Each structure stands twice: as C-alpha cells, then as structure tokens.
Amino acid sequence: MQMDRQSDPVSKAMRWTGYVLSFLPALFLLVDGAMKLVKPEPVVKATIELGYPESTILGLGIVLLVSTIIYLIPRTAVLGAILLTGYLGGAVASHLRHGDGPFPVLFPAVFGMLIWGGLVLRDARLRTLLPWRS
Image (cartoon, rainbow, N blue to C red; front, side, top):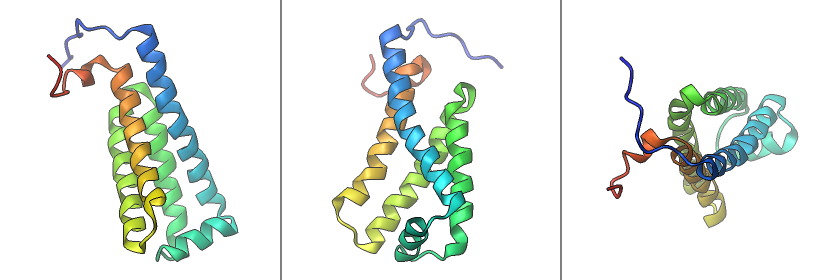
C-alpha cells in the first residue's frame, strides 16, 4: 500500500534546517554510543553512579547506535525517532531518580525535541499530523 504524496512540499530551506536539526543530536548520540562500546573510565563511573551495573554499558551503546543509525536513514527515520525517544526518556528518568539537577534532566529532553523537530521540518507527511495545522 503506497501513501499518497502530499500537496504541501517541503521548501529547500525547511528541509536543510531539518537536516541540521537532525544531524547535530544524531552526531552527539553516535559519539555517545561509540563511547559506551569503548567504555572509558568516565563512562563506567557515570553509569555506576546512576545505579546501573557496568555490564549494561555495552547493551546501551548498541541500542543507542542502532537506533541512531535507523533514525539517520530517511525511510526508517520515524522508527528511529520513536526508538530514540524511548532511549532519551530512560535517560530523563534515570537522572530524575538519581536526583540530578535540571541540566542533566533537560538535556536528553531537548535532544528528543531536536530529533522530532528536525524530522517534522523535513517530512511533509509528519506535519499533516500536527494538531494546529489547518
């Protein structure tokens, strides 16, 4: 079943803004995922301080890298955004549970907004789902 093409095309400026908004957090998440695979001392220390055993770091890194790669592929970007939203929601919950200040709690939430904002800017189909669109 093929979806109908939207009559509301994405302007070149909007598409490029969407790519930039998508690429910046994705680049950070790729680096973060790679660091979890390498497991340097600061990553291990931070994970343990949040209450997770060291054995979870590799799995978190794999999930983060796979989800980010799925997000970067245009055909699977929505699935990647959903997966990253879950991952980042877990980060917010972990920092709230740990009693961290506002920055560690808001940082992943802002990344989630950038991920979805970039995707909405570059995909006209998603903009049709917005409630304020007329």
